Length: 496
Image 1 (cartoon, rainbow, N blue to C red):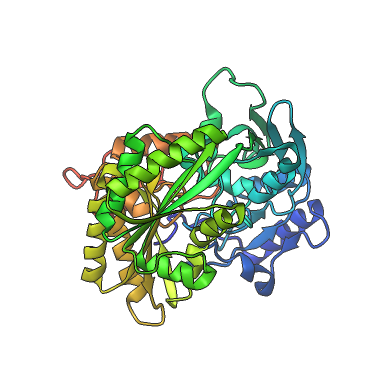
Image 2 (image 1 turned 60 degrees about the vertical axis):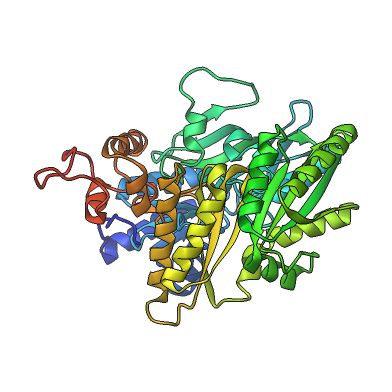
């Protein structure tokens, strides 16, 4: 699993000249280039893949960021944007001959616009900090990735992040109403804003989830929502994973859209309970957390309906969070599931795929079968309401071949998602992790269009090259694309 681009190598004199030009535009200590300084930037939260960049630029102003891009463009040096480094797909994996453009110092909340229910922030602002700033006004920012205490809004936009409350309130793309981006030429482009609509192509949606390949995000305007009058969580236990999956389908089928609807299997339940002590049912095969929010009357009515649905679908126990403290504790276990699993295995590989809800039970059983085939345990934590799976493949990187087995198993799981009508990602992005599975997801014609869009924004492929969209040659080598008479389709396609 490696990025597909080998940029031209600068010789020592060219490299030193580049460093001098960058340092002249950046604040003191705004350019890192020694091995010790670069080490923290060698990977994101997919640490199995590491690579030291040539340099890291830490601008503090728009003009400094613009200068970095123009200098790198002139030198033909690739640029990889980076936020907090919490991404799980290798989207911020650097290039040896490239510059990492860190946006960590773009960390100001510029405006909380109560009248228009939106916030204008810089990309380095933490997800949770937006809600904290809006809270005195009775508002909050809905998308809440499990890493929200650390992840930044710029990275959320780049990967189109989700969270436990995205079933009802949408992913990042549904909650961002404006962006300012810098092109590889350093030009500032404004997309969207505080109005409901804007003329022309919907470039705002195109930029969300583009993984830093089309432009560098320097400002984000997000939608804020009023805090619901009441929010209450039900926790249900099941003896069979299939029953929990059917209960999810029944809740949505009844016309009820919970604020969050999460599912955990037994290994993840036990790990989270040992870590957080949330009161989880450690003997259950599966557990559902269902949060209902809205007015007091609405929640009271829906709580009873959902409770009846859960029991009619063989829930062995249904409990309700009676206090805000208990509600927070229920969610704390779910949001800490990833680090909790890290306590029971030397390493784990977190996957991210999405399937139609009706296939939940079948896919979970198939994942279990695949795990046994590969001799690896799999703990499942996922956004059940929207079918976004997060299988955690447990392995030991110190055992020869186990990382490779975990990768292969992960690929099989993603291909299973595609097979049942789903997709290879729900919120983590593609990065370098899922390039091969993109060959399964999309046809040659579709990939050609993706490359054409990339070329329109970044003709020399200097922005995060080798990520998200595989070349047709890679797909042919992977064996997932038809090759006729020894020739690839679209042989004149630019290769990135």
